[in-house]
Length: 190
Image 1 (cartoon, rainbow, N blue to C red):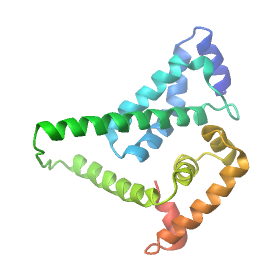
Image 2 (tube, rainbow, N blue to C red):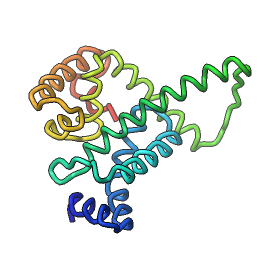
Image 3 (cartoon, helix red, strand yellow):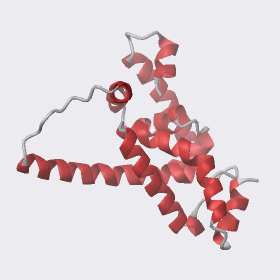
């Protein structure tokens, strides 16, 4: 059963089918959010917020190829931007109140998460060297696996614009990744 039928049933008062939509798309939304913010726990919380927003706005969802994923990615982008603003505000307030302390954690799982977050941070730093509109293309097409048409809907731009931005982003990423073989640089992006 496609997303369109599940959304219609959810709007008609069958909230349990929304759980199916969550199961179907939560991992992709979670990965999209994690790649944007680089924190496992924050990505879990923000993924929940995306689906809460989707439930509240279920009548406004725009499906592409009978998939709600492009709309969910666009919503996730807004949620991440809002969270970044909140985090900046919290860090500024915290910096004014208490000194920062480092408490090392020696658990293997935590170390693995730190390594993952460090690699994600390195890749985000590379991505930040691109113009914002090309960053969005990389996030949607390379990381989240959307096709150009779905990315066009998620970004609310024409298909040709997506294709040209995608081409420029690939070239710039190759140029920025001189220490990594050409094709491997793009494949290493999560």
